[in-house]
Amino acid sequence: MPLQKTEIHSFLSLAKHYPVFDVRSPAEFAHAHIPGAHSLPIFNDNERKEIGTSYKQVSREDAIKKGLRYFGPNMEDFVTKVEQAMRNYASDDKKVLVHCWRGGMRSGAMAWLLGFYGFDVHVLDGGYKAYRNHILTQLELPFRLNIIGGYTGSGKTEVLHQLQKRKIAVVDIEAIANHKGSAFGGFGQGAQPSQEQFENNLHHALTAFYFTENGVFNQAEPIWVENESQRIGALNLPNSFYQTMQHQPAYVIDVPFEERLEYIVKHYGTIEKEKLVNAIIRIQKKLGGLDTKNAVNFLLENNVHECFRILLSYYDKRYKESSEKNERKPVTVSASVTSAEQTAGFLLNQHTTH
Image 1 (cartoon, one colour):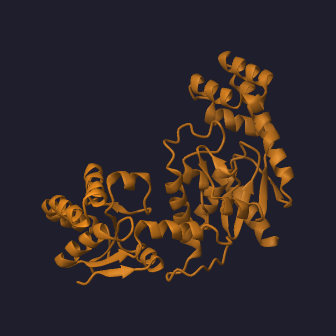
Image 2 (image 1 turned 90 degrees about the horizontal axis):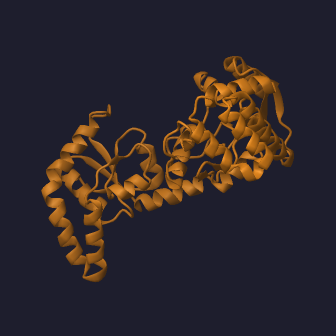
Image 3 (image 1 turned 45 degrees about the horizontal axis):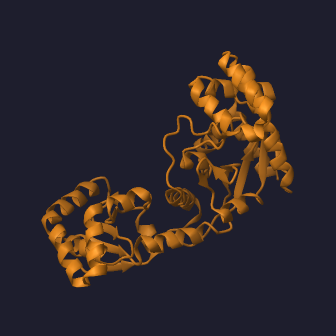
């Protein structure tokens, strides 16, 4: 079948139904890739480096010969891997999507092989570079969002999940970032993705709600997200998206301090003391010398409640300062962390009446 160059909107539309094969090197894929893509590297990292050096220092022809030397012996294996991956897709029309960095020789070689075997191959025009340019532009779109705010320990994530259970449009930014946002937010979350992969994943989550099949922006309903600082652990929300968040309707979950304290102790109180102490030390400049000393001492004395009382008061102060800088007037919903389902219902009711 003939090689088909496919522009980015059509490629991503097809990617909802057919497998995407990324033929870049393992290191390129590990750094960042299209969410859901299968890694099918034509060359390993060392081979890619060798061929690139040959292209720059010798000639294009010499680089191609070296590439063929590595590509040839693996052709059967490439076809087999594609066949195995396609077993997870319902379609019988053998349509596959392929891309490399710029849509050049690597994707062209793989497309030739798979097309020769009988697959209907679509190559991303411009490659992964075109995809990155596309999503950075898309993240500047005028999203309609509903922001769920509230002091630390209000159970905002649980409320978000309850909205999701009701089939409401939700994007869990903290889950995408693998971090809960505070100095303690990385505990138990695993490694964070690269900044580039974070942006890719955020775009992927948003597109589930605001794109039609032909790539046209059409957002009928707002997407619910949790209020976030621009920095989440080691990552940053794209500036345009973050600025959009600052001007969207906000709903604040109001939960009493003592109830939030119990919630925090339950979720963070069993973490190793050494890790907690290190996290406290990281914020000591803003926390202040006396509160830092007292929080650490309470922790070492196994008085977890009083340690977290200091920390929660600190985060409450920061949240209040941040809220006062924002000109929007949020709708406040009195709630309890033990009734996330009920709170989700209150939020939806408030949304429909405002």
